[in-house]
Image (cartoon, rainbow, N blue to C red; front, side, top):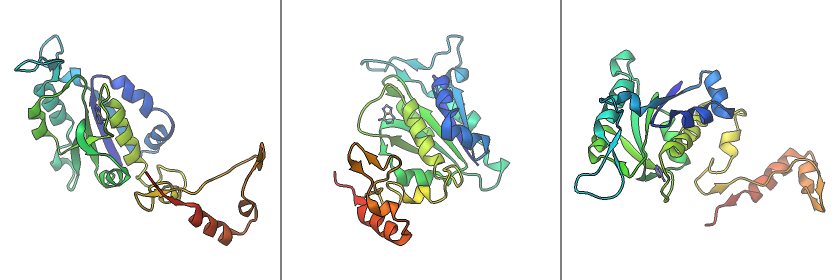
Length: 223
Ligand code: ADE
C-alpha cells in the first residue's frame, strides 16, 4: 500500500481524476490510497491566504512558506508510527528533474508520497528546504501542479503489483524493457479494415512465430 497525499488549492480536480478507472480500482483493492489536501485548511488568518506578492516586486503571486510547512508537517507520517516507513516530499515545478518511467518505478518503493502542487508564479524559495525532490513533467509551463501530480501518481501506481490487470502488461509495454523501447503493433477485429489487413502471422496460432515477429516489430524509438 502506497499513500499519495496531494497538497493543492483545487482538491476537487484531484478527486475527480482519482475516483475513476484504474486509480479508483486500485484504491478499492487497497493497493493505493489517494488523498487531496486543501492548502487553505492550513492557513493562519481568516482570509485563508496562501499566496502573496513577491518581495522586490514583479508580476504575479508567490505561494507562502507557512501554510505549506504546516500541511507537510501534518501529513507526514511520523517515522515512529511504523519502523522503516518511507515518506518522500515532492514539489511539482517546471524547474524540476524531468519525469520518466524509471523515476516512476523508483518512487513506487515509498510508503508515502507527498506531492506539492503549486499555482501562481511559483513557490517561496524557502519551501525548497521542506522538499526531497523537484519534478517537472516536461519543458512547458502549466497553470498549476495538479495535472503533473496526477501524472506522477498514475505512473507510480501502475508500478505497484496488481494495479495493472495482467502481470506481463507492464513489462511488455512501451518503455518497459528500456527507455527507448516502443511496443510492437497490435490489432483487434475486424481482420480487414478498408483493405488494411491484420498481418497473417497473428492469425496463425503459432505462438513461437508470433513472439519472434513481435520482437522484430518492436522498435527502438527514434526522435
Ligand atoms: N507546474 C507548472 N508546470 C509544470 C510542469 N511542466 N511540471 C511540473 N509542475 C508544473
